[in-house]
Image 1 (cartoon, rainbow, N blue to C red):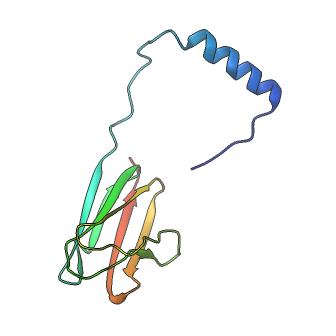
Image 2 (image 1 turned 90 degrees about the vertical axis):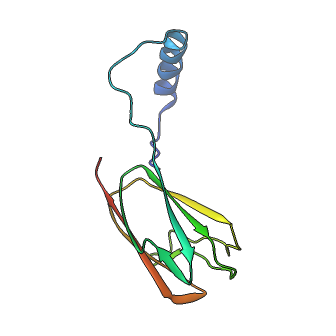
Length: 119
């Protein structure tokens, strides 16, 4: 997420604009596309699919179908799930384009990658 600092004068202006328009519901053009969710199954000590390509803004969920605890850790450390027991789920929204390789820290031979492309 990106945060911007707003001065107090700007905050008052934003508050007044919000108050003036909050009771009006207008259709101001195209609405954003609904957020999509893709699932990666963890089964037989593998991520399935091992490679997944999604558009920016997509939620990727990992679902553990093994009888063994697994986790999901990105190589840059920005994604780090807790241990996922059988039928546990962990989800991340990928907002920025790029390639995000990951692995199971408990079973490092298990690897995968999420490719995020523009909308």
